Length: 133
Image (cartoon, rainbow, N blue to C red; front, side, top):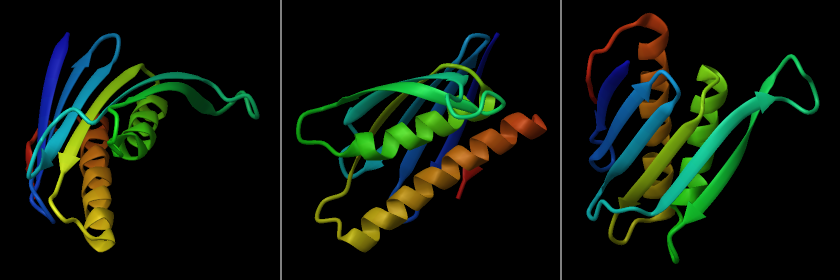
């Protein structure tokens, strides 16, 4: 089984998220801004929480490209998908906006979080509609 999902956000810049879901896990590509690129790669493996075995946590390996900050975005998003769907996740992120101020960066992070939430909601409801918000 292979399913693909495509989501797009235009606020504050264009961000594309392509998700491939297989029987064994999820692969996410989140790219956008003025110069889409590979800024960081994360792989997250779900496991029972060490503090509470009834909860799911995960172990993550983070590989940032030198001089990039996408690891700070990709790690929590990969972990959210891994713990919600209880499957391994590979997440590649690369978003660059020239001269982005802290407020713009905050809005980009919110847009990325919203895209992941839309994907998880579509998996939960079985709705495979593409997002163009």
